[in-house]
Image 1 (tube, one colour):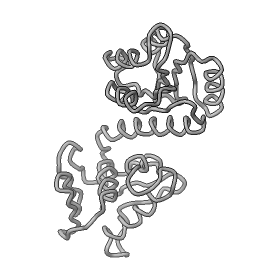
Image 2 (cartoon, rainbow, N blue to C red; image 1 turned 180 degrees about the horizontal axis):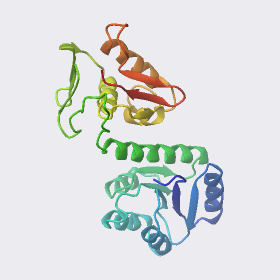
Image 3 (cartoon, rainbow, N blue to C red; image 1 turned 90 degrees about the vertical axis):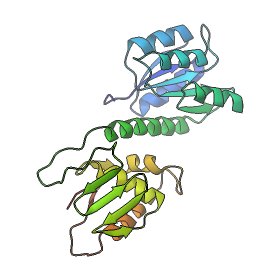
Image 4 (cartoon, rainbow, N blue to C red; image 1 turned 45 degrees about the vertical axis):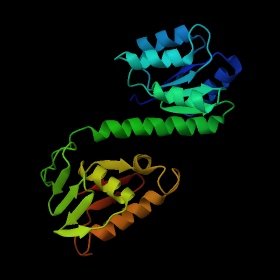
Amino acid sequence: MSETPRILLIEDDTILAEHTCQYLENYGFFVQWEEDGNAGLRAARHAPFDLVLLDLMLPGIDGLEICRQLRAHPSTAAIPILMLTARGEETDRIVGFEIGADDYLPKPFSLRELVARIRAILRRVQLDAEAQLPPPTTPHATSPQTPTQETLTIGTLSINQTTREVFCRNQPIELTASEFDLLWLIAHRPHHVWKREQLLDLVRGREFEVFDRSVDVHISKLRKKLERDPKEPTLIQTVWGVGYRFVPE
């Protein structure tokens, strides 16, 4: 992802498009606007974009067909697509998701909500990309197994993804679903600093809201369950103002 996120807006409503472009640019996004379906499809194929905002009712070629073609071409298949449309029926949403849309925002919508959804999608993309990277090699860390293997063993900690069982010093550790997912993620990349927003995206929709600080509560509970002896160094370190990192024994 580029340092300044690049957004392609394909929208034929001039007033809405101008307001959207100005609002997103104020939040640090680069926005290219195309008001014709064919022009929007060409732009998506010829320039790198981090996300496409796509209206359904467009002149030239409609948004559903644009979505199909973007998903069918290797160079654009992975671009996140957020659909914007006045058609809010359930069938339209289902069709949009089935052909590859990442999110759906019916008109009229709040520009503030639009920014929040864009940021959430881009964070998930970043999180997925980082989770696929091999863990870094450090002189003080035991190299974990690859994320594709069901069991991860680091020092005295063992995590089984299939059974969702965790053992520390040969003792079983009972974790909630969110606690397990958080541990499975951060343990794969020792010493990597995870932002709170990334960890929130991992467990969003479970038992807390995306914009709260409940991830801190989950980390605190994880520490208490994994670190029975307060004299021992912590496995999950706080990086003040940023987030957390997993530091093996």
